Structures are given as C-alpha cells and as structure tokens.
Length: 333
Image (cartoon, rainbow, N blue to C red; front, top):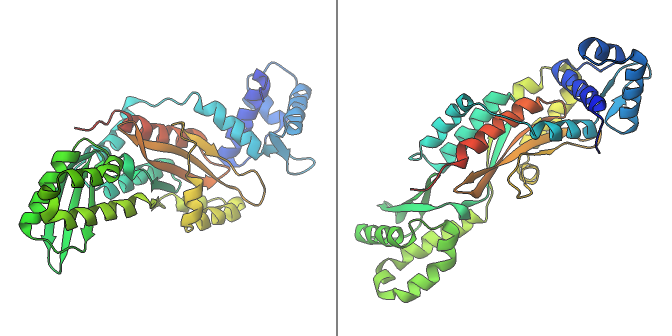
C-alpha cells in the first residue's frame, strides 16, 4: 500500500518515537517534532486515516497512537531500501571472518556475537548450507581407541569430525591426499553426489582406505541433513529493561530455548535480501530481522536478530548489512 509523503513521514515518526521511548504519538507531538506545514486538525485527520488503514492503533480512547504490526512492517520495508553501511563498520566482522584457520563453528559464533553486541538483542545463526562449502584440503589423523579425526578445510573455516574407523597412519595420509587431489575447489555437495563414481573408477587406488572415505562421506551426509544453531544472548538483558514489555521479553526468551521454532523463524525466501517477519497478532509479539550468510555466492547460513515488535530496526538492519557486505567478496583460494 503506497502512502502519501506526509502520511509516510507521520508513520515513520510514530514508529521511531515508540521505539525510542515507548511514547504513543499524538497530533500535538507531531506538530512539535516534524516540519509539516499543516494544522493540528489536519494531522489528527492523518492519524485517523493511518489508523483506519491499519498502520496505527489507539490504546485508549483519549490517548495517542502506537504502531501495529502492519505499521512496523511498512516502516521496515521503507527503511531497508535505504540502508547504507560505512566502510569502517565492516572491520570488526572482517576480523572475525579473516581467521579462516579457525573452525567454522568458531567463525559462526563470532559473527553472531558481534551482531548481538552491536544490536543489544539476542542473535541466532543457523548453518544449513554445508553442501555449498568449497573444499580446500583434508587432513585425516589416526587417534587412539579405533578413531580418526578429520579436518576438512573450506573457504569458510575448518570443519572437524571424529569418526569410528580403524585406520593406519599411511591409510589416513593416502586418504587425505586422494580427497584433496580430487575434490579441492569443489563443494561438499559435489563430493557427496560424485564420490561413488570416483570410487568405481579408481577402485585399486582407493581400496586400502575405502573405509576411511566411506565413513567420512556418511558423516558429511549426516551433517548436511542437520541445521546447526548458534545462539548468542548478549542482548537478552536489554529486553527486560522496560517494565511495560516484560511479557513480550518473556516470549522472546522462550523462543530462544526452542530450536524448532528458531529454525522456522530463520528460514529465508532465497532472494538474498534482508527480511523481516513481524508478528501480526497480540498473542505473538516476537519478531525477527534476518539475512543470508553467503560465501562464494552460495548460502551457508542465515542470521537473525530476535526481539519484540518494538526494536531498533534501523540499527539491526545496518548490522546485518555489515555481515552481508563483509562476506560478499570472500572467495576460495
């Protein structure tokens, strides 16, 4: 729904004032705070119109108006079209990402921590795109008690697996060299889909360490079928600062304990943009601003900042834009 420039300005002011100090907007307040060349009566009519259109609601007959879920949604959609990030804002996230010798879990947790601290809201990263990771090397090491440790180097950090396999040091060394030679530069998904053909064509070469390769592929398939969540709660305390929204804060905190609900909330439409899901009823006021984390142009994970409807959407959108821009140019070696 397209609004006139004046209605849009009034709605944005209503949302921003309510986010800032939980103050309902009035025609008098707009008159004082906005440079609009019109009477208080005209502003009152505009507020009535915005309420009739579903963007605002009146808590009390004689009180001011507050944003509805539809009002927040319109504000955020308008906001996201103009989100800009300064180069200096990218450095901290780049610092986390540049340590590609770190494990993927550490990098994902680091990104979530940076965003949570920047926004003062709980942040969740869901890794569900393991198949899109580009491989760089394999290191397979025999351990005690009939186990091996596999370090899988990717363009987004190392993945570590411990597998129940009996293998000699030479078998592990040969398997590492074989897998690196044939799958460096390919994705995990490609490797899973094509390993059978490689095994058939090179049976004599791979026979000695086939159990190592088979167990590794089984482990990758299990990992690829799972969604791994990294939840950072640095911003949880902020949710409890406003006594008027304690119930909303409790709903957010409950969601953070529900992995199934979090997984559903962080699902994306696949278009690669920042998305906003704002609760549309009075019984569920938990909302999420989310974005894809992509490496080499392929989606690896989604990151979401979770809170009540009354959130700092501008700050959160900017923080997520930082993450997207920081990862955009990350290429495989």
